[in-house]
Length: 184
Image 1 (tube, one colour):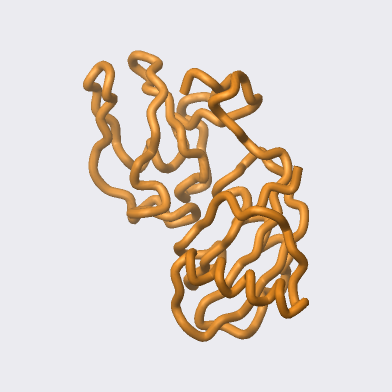
Image 2: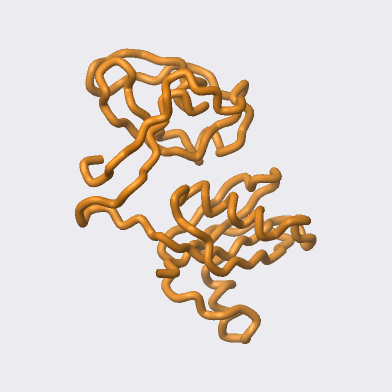
């Protein structure tokens, strides 16, 4: 966490009753910066906060806090500026989203893809974006192999080297696998 300059949301700020995309929270008791280990695995961005249960413990001071407050954004810390060489936050990201079990794209493809990019890279601007409907389940590795096949067939452009992925529930529900490409 030492490689980030952070700005803080005011404690107690209402976050709309949903799990936020910020992956870092600040202990309100001692100020320690902590990761949200269950974000993207147990609870997904946009899940209703009513689904979040239990308590989270600060690893430094041992204070306990309601997980709904932690994952709902009450103590969120948002990355603002890259400092040092250990953190490589992209400023532009391209994304290819495999919309599983669907051949129908969402009504607003641009907005949908932006929401997926923000799940992983809240400060990055979105460059190119594509949605592929797929009627089966797949892993990120299988998605990458399919993307490479589409590139070879000339159906999608080569976006460069894939550097991250997301597998889970998309912004409108339904399962997605997203591949992220550094566009800067």
